[in-house]
Amino acid sequence: MKATLTLARRELASLFFSPIGYVVLALFALGSSMVFYIGFAPGNHATMRITYSGVVWLLVFLAPAVSMRLVSEELSRGTIERLMTSPVNDLQIILGKWLAAMFFFAVLLSPLVVQIIVLELAADPDLGPVFTGLVGLLLVGCLYLAIGTFASAATENQIIAFLLTVFIICGLTFLLYFLPTAEFIPPGVRSAMYYANVNRQFEDFNKGLIDLRNFVYFGSMTALFLFLAVKLLESRRWR
Amino acid sequence: MIQASHLTKWYGPTLAVDDLSLELEPGKIVGFLGPNGAGKSTTIRMLTGYLPPTSGRATLDGHDVLTHAADARRKLGYLPESNPLYPEMRVEEYLHFAGKLHGMARPLRRSRIDHVADRCGLSHLRRRTIGRLSKGNKQRVGLAAALLHDPPMLVLDEPTSGLDPNQIGQVRQLIRDLAGDHTVLLSSHILPEVQRVADRVVIVAQGRIVADGTVEELRERSHAEDDRAPVHVEVRGTPDSVKQALASLDHVDTVEAAEEPGQYGWCNAWVVPHGRKDLRVQIAEALAERNLLVREIRREAGSLEEYFVRVTDSSRNVSNQAATTSGGVA
Image (cartoon, rainbow over all chains, first blue to last red):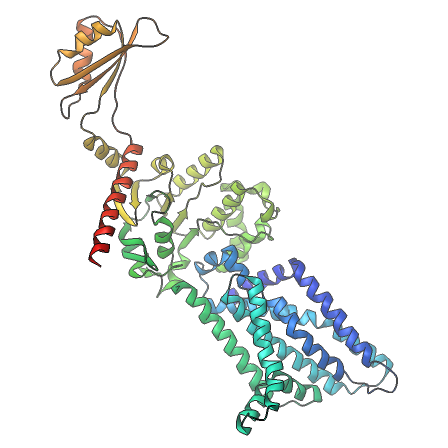
């Protein structure tokens, strides 16, 4: 545990050191504020729902930009050789990386807090869905960054890691959003696809629902990709 | 302490390390020598557990590097050949990070960082960003990180690459000071570097050990294989008189003599003996009898360098032959 936190702290310092970190922070602040601004008008409902729905699409590109360097940079610099000969194991390396990315992600979401305060000052929003929506966004972040960690463990090229992450996320969002509407899909498969769609899982939180099923979905998917990332890192030794 | 048994590594169809066995006694410094591409780094990576061998086993202090990795790694200080570092970190920050990975508590870390920074000549660079350091200073940071947790076993892959002669001297001294309570495996492709530090030298070529022994033993072997080491003599006299004096001695095959350029009256002579024979005493006596003034008598035995070239080269020929025969059979 201690080693994991040590690794996470070093990674976090690197994330804040890199220019890409600030670009992502700025893009998110700009994008989320624009979505918020569009919905922020007299006569509209005083909720964060539209903002959150927009933001979740933004994350399809911004989360991979955070995660792309996590392991791939260690691979390309060769620093992985020092880590893998230190008394830390592959699971600790992956968890440390992912935790650092999650902390960065929490900072990334901070403009939303500002928007919530603005909304609170201007109107009287129902804070329940505002809170559950934030929880939902954090869970989406858990999953996307786990996918990103996995992809960055697959290659030492950060651009490939970025594209691979976007590709997998698009599969879980766009593909599972539109494909089930096709007629040739059997009903059983269709409902499974609906369940596996990230946006539908997130919408439950956005509505203000707290359902164990949603937690199980995000928890198990995140664990799956982190597990795959550990296996991928292990496999580098055998290639 | 550090033990490799029958390590073999194939990279696809290429055989990088071929059934290599090696054992290091505790407290000794062993130089691991070989031309570039001989399989030194691959062997080292297998010994440190970074690369798994195709077959064979590596243990550190009895712990298998793959199955008991945590125990083995705790006792190991490793400087990889490429010396990878995080360029955005400061020297001190990085050393703290390395210490924390080894589970060192803060007070211990502080005192050890003071110690290794001092020993590696980093005291004035502690607040500097690693990315802006020169190659030599980066190398010292890497070395400091390897020494930080005071490991009983050290594996240093080309520790002096990129250093200037002064720094090489410092690092050499540092490594020599480690002997006794540290077991050190030191790889290099530069012979004199290893020769001056190591208790024992292991020479590899084409993934196999071609020579193994103390520096003296290897030098001895190089003499033994070099039968007809000529004796070089500098004498005051004409070439003819010197030839006359030496040609009549027993066991002398040929004598050549020539006037030394630029030094009037002095003459260089080379005496080649019959078989393995040290003629220096006979030559001195013969010249003294004739009242010829001598200023140097030196036996030009093969140097360790020549020996190194010979063993690494001949093994290349052998393995080439092996490769062609096995290819023919296949």
